Length: 88
Image 1 (cartoon, one colour):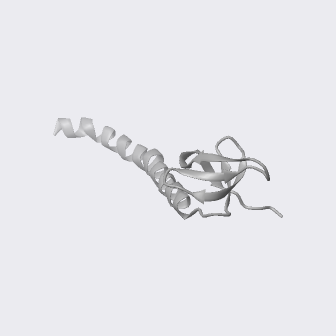
Image 2: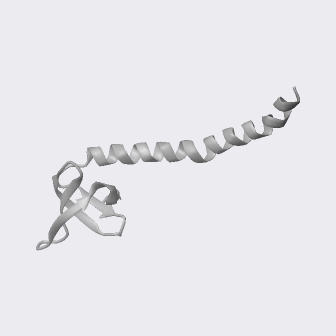
């Protein structure tokens, strides 16, 4: 009985950490993965570096992207921060 009373605060601490830290991170990662899967040709995205690029082709682990009229390149899917919404 004494061990249970000593371990009870640790159990509560672990439960609080799960609901405050771990679970929200898992939900955010799931939403980001869903967003990456829904991206298609013509969508604009913001990269982790702050660049706004347009997707030209969706590949398995990369996006073929267009930076401006003359510059095209490939972008790793993990480097996409979010979808860009025009504020026009």
